[in-house]
Length: 225
Ligand code: CA
Image 1 (cartoon, rainbow, N blue to C red):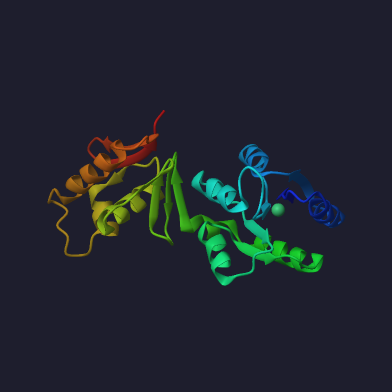
Image 2 (spheres, helix red, strand yellow):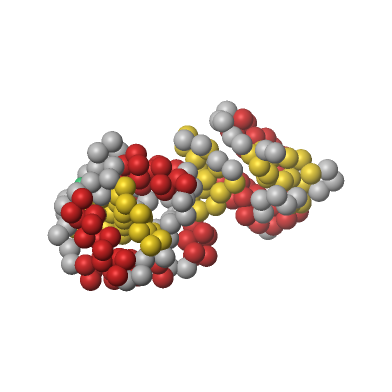
C-alpha cells in the first residue's frame, strides 16, 4: 500500500511516516500543497493523508483539485480544527474521512484500514467519468473540465446512461427503456431532441469527448481521438 502524506510540520510528517513504514506501507511525503498535487497527479496512491493547513495550497483545495481531476483515491484530512462546520466542509470537498489532531497513531491506522477496505467497485459506482466529463451520482453534479454544468433530470439520466456504456453504440430502444418510462413512444423524436440538448451544453465547454451518431443504431459517447 502506497501512501502520500502532505503535511508541513516535519515532526508530524516524520512521526506518521515512521509509524506507517513499520506497518509495511510505502510512504511519500510532500511539505506543501503544490508539491502534494505534483505527487498525487503523477503517482498512484492507495490513500492520501492531507493536513488541512498547508503552505501554497490548503489540504481542502488540494482535495478539491484531486476530485476535480476525477481521482477516486481515498483521502483522509488531518487538522487541528474540530468544529462541526469544518468537518462538513472537509467531507463536502470529497474527503472520505477526517481526523482531529492530536490523535493516537492507532486511531490513524484504524481509519486508514477502514478506508482501504472500501471496495473500489462501490466507489466507482458513485462517480462516472469519460475524458474530462465527471458525473457525481450522489451529489447529482456534472463537471466538464473545471466547469460545473447543470442538466435537467432527463438530460442527466440520458447522459448517465451513455456514460455507463461509454464507447458502445446504444440504440434508441435501449435508451427509451432505461431513461424514459414504459409509456414512452420510441418512435417519437424525443430522444434526438434530448441528445441535441446535451450536445449543445457540451459544445459550450472545453470537452474532450462527444456524443456520436451511430448510423442505424443510436448514439455513442466517446472520447475525442
Ligand atoms: Ca499544517
